[in-house]
Amino acid sequence: MSKAIQAIRGMNDLLPDTLALWQRIEQEALDVLALYGYREIRFPVLEKTELYKRSIGEVTDIVEKEMYTFEDRNGDSLTLRPEGTAGCVRAGVENGLLYNQVQRLWYAGPMFRHERPQKGRYRQFHQIGVEAFGMSSPDVDAELILMSARLWHALGIRGLELQINTLGTPAARAAYRQVLVEYLRSHVDQLDDDSRRRLDMNPLRVLDSKHPAMQDIIAAAPSLQDHLDAESVEHFAALRHYLDSAKISYRVNPRLVRGLDYYTRTVFEWVTTELGAQGTICAGGRYDGLVEQLGGQSTPAAGFAIGLERLVELALLQQLTGANVSPQVYIAVLGGSEAVREGLGQAERLRDSGIRIELNCGGGSLKSQLKRADRSGAYYALLIGDDELTRRAATLKNLRAEEPQQPVEFDRLPEYFRDRLAVGDKS
Ligand code: ATP
Ligand code: MG
Image (cartoon, rainbow, N blue to C red; front, side):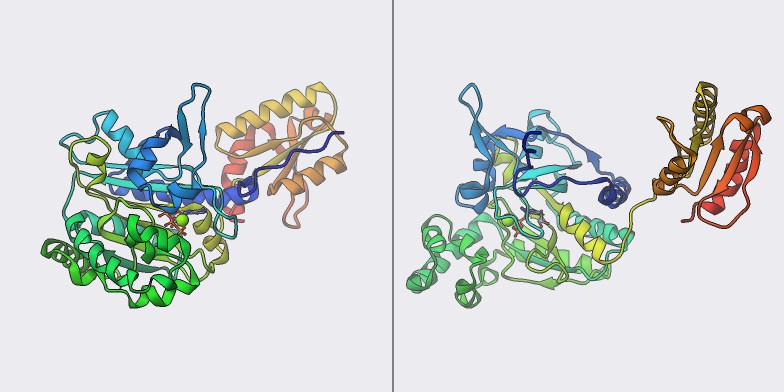
């Protein structure tokens, strides 16, 4: 036997037992998105590297060190998507979805970042992303937040804190940038290497540094809030008013800047303290300049992305479970091809009635078939052998409760289970 090949570090297999919860979360998200009029869009996982450089920003963690970038056989530089907004905007512009109209879109799928793998941080991870185009007023910012809150509620997720902030307009940020650079220069000997480099290229990023030694300097830095333009202040006040009226509690965190360059005005995160350092479950904000920056007509936009691995981890901690999709009835087949033929036929008829059936394929002794039946999670086993064929009735065995075995006529099977499983499958 040759040595088995292993998966790439930081890229996980998702196995059937966990996926029941993933599917429940995804289904709940789909339902909530539909309630708000969002429609799905799908775009490739590979794009030209240029797309991410132009949108996320050259001097960001993602573009500087996290992208999976390679040359394809034609020598073109391609990148596995590290996030969805850039691709969504590219696809929206290219297909004329964003021109002079309002669009509410969502997407879901894998994202790729070459980070140090640890709990809640992987190299392939999954997001559900939402983008709203063509609306500049804070009502849609509030609606996005309400929609995410509704999802937590629908799922039964508790204890998330909403943090919000405003980054102002690009002009206000430019003014603030000067003040910040002066401050950081006066502390240049205390900056780490990354921050020193960013001082000139992208000083706001310094505020996003996770470096422990930097936290005091960041805390004492001048605040962007003191340099905001009047319109952004008003926009933010309106958002807070809408959230207050909707009884959504939040904390204004003036240090919340987000790791991507394209944000303007509103930014927000939903954070838990239950997952350690990787506590942000959902993050987003407004990015009014991005569509134009990517070659579209100037279009205001706002959105967010949910990190599914973190949400699933939190859901598990809070004892949430997925839908039960185990078979309800296991059909054991004993005897020759006549019994198999009958088993195949009865299984199809029961499935026609919406009953989940696992059919024993490949034969085996009664004992081994009943063992498989038990492991399948089914509530009942149906035995079909020579006697049953003669009597035209299967033998029913309750796998989860003491109950004598009994014959059930083939003709009556669907009706029998319809009545019983309504009660029996609450397991
Ligand atoms: P962080 O500060 O945790 O690195 P980020 O600001 O880079 O997050 P975004 O780009 O805003 O994250 O992505 C939105 C969400 O996607 C995050 O809040 C998180 O839940 C999830 N996420 C981001 N990177 C990863 C990763 N490497 N592994 C798992 N989930 C991730
Ligand atoms: Mg990150």
